[in-house]
Length: 556
Image: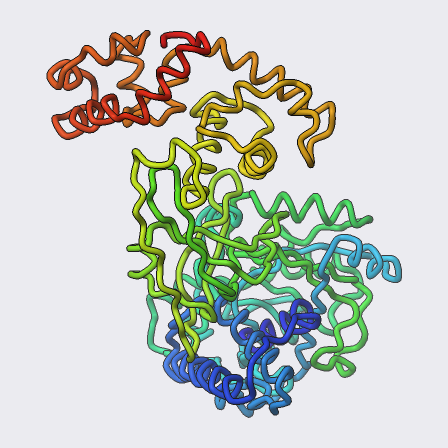
C-alpha cells in the first residue's frame, strides 16, 4: 500500500506539469504496454511473494511516469495500482495518509492556519493498525486501502518490539503506526533508504521469516480518540512501551523550527530509515470522521531524493584532448539537490555499448563528489530502441595541437585542459570561453592566445572590456609559470609525481634522456618510457616547443 500511496503522491506533486513525449499513437501504445507489463510483474512479486525486484524509489518514479504517459495519450489507467491483496478486515479508524508539502514556503502557508504543532521523522516502513482490548493486543491490520486491510495479527505478535500486553490508558485503544527495519545509527544522508520499506513488507507477507520479524520496530504516530494533549499522549505511549514516539515527537512553533529539525534528522544517527518529516497538529477530529486522503491536520515534507530516474533524450559523443571519444547521455531535466541536471557521462564508447543505453531508456542518476552528476544504473529500457552509431575516430594523443575544422573538438579539449588547475590554471576560462576566443581570433595552435593584445581580448564578442583586460593580465602572468607547468599543459604522458621526481627544468635536458633514464622515475615502466620518448620526438610537439622558445617561456 505504501507503494500505491507514495506513487500517487509523487504523481500529484511532481508530474502534473510534465511534458508529454512526442510519439505516434502506435509508439505510445507500445511503450505504455511494455512499462505497464513490467510494473505489473514487479507488483506480483512484491504483493504475492513479498519480494522487491526494484527499489522503492525506482518503482515510485516509473509508476508515476506510466500514469503520465497514459494521460498524455488518452488511455485509461489500468486502475489505481491497488494490488489484489487489499484485504477485507475493516479498520476501526481509517488511515488518512498525509499531504505532501513540496517546499518550505508551502509548509509555512500550511502551518499558518494550524496550532499546537509537533514534528516527527517520517519513518520509512509499512503502516499498521494495532488494536488493544483489555490490555492485550487483539488484532493488527495492514493499511490496505485505508478502510480495509489484511490481518497481520500473527506476524505482529512475533515482533518483540510490539508489546503483547499493556496497562493504563492504552489498554483499550486503537493505534496507528509504522513497522520499520531496526537500524543501528542510520544516517539518512549517507546511507539512503536501503530498500527498508520493501524488506519489512516482504517479511510481513511471507509470515514465516521469524529472523527478520525480530529486526522490526514500531513507531506510533497516531492515537485516534486519545488524550487531547500531545504531551499526555506521549507520556502514556512511553509508559506502555512505545518510547520512540516520545523521543522523536517535538513541539515546533515556526517553519524555521521544522526546517532545522528536518536538517538535523537528515544527518543524525537514528534507529530507523526516514524519507522526510511529518508535521501534525494535536487538534484532531474524532476518529469516526477520519477518511483516506482527508488528514488535513498532518503534512509531510520529504527529503530531496539522492537519486532520480531520468529519461535519456539522446546520446552525444565528444572527442577529448587525447583523442578518445567519450559518451554523454542527454537527459530530460531533473533536479538533484540544488542542481538542474540535463546530462551525465557514460564513459568510453566501449562502456556505453556494454551498458546498452539508447534514447528512451530510463536511468538512475545521483550526485558524486563535488556535485558532479553520476550514472548509477539502467532502470528501464524502452520498447523501441534505436542507438546511434559512434563516430570513427582518427585522433589520438598526438593529433590536433594545431587547429583545423576536423580537429575542432579535440583542439578545444586541449585548450580546456591547458587552462585547468592541472595545467596553467588560468582562472575564469573554460570551454565556452575558449570557443569564443578561437572563433574570434582563429588560433593557429594551442598557444596562439599568448600573442593576443589587450585590445583584441577586450573586443572579443561576448567579452566585456573588464573581462578582456583581466584575461590579458592572466595571460601575461602565465608566462612566468615554471617549465613543468608548461609541459603538463602540452600533455606530456607523465604523472605529476613522476614529473616532480624528474627534476626536469628545460626542454633540452628532457630530450637528452633515454628509456633507462625515464624508467628510474616512480610509476614509469618500459611502455610508459616509450610513450614519453615518442611524445618528445613528435614533430608538432617540437614545433610548439620551438615557438615557446621564441616567446621566451621558461625552460624552452
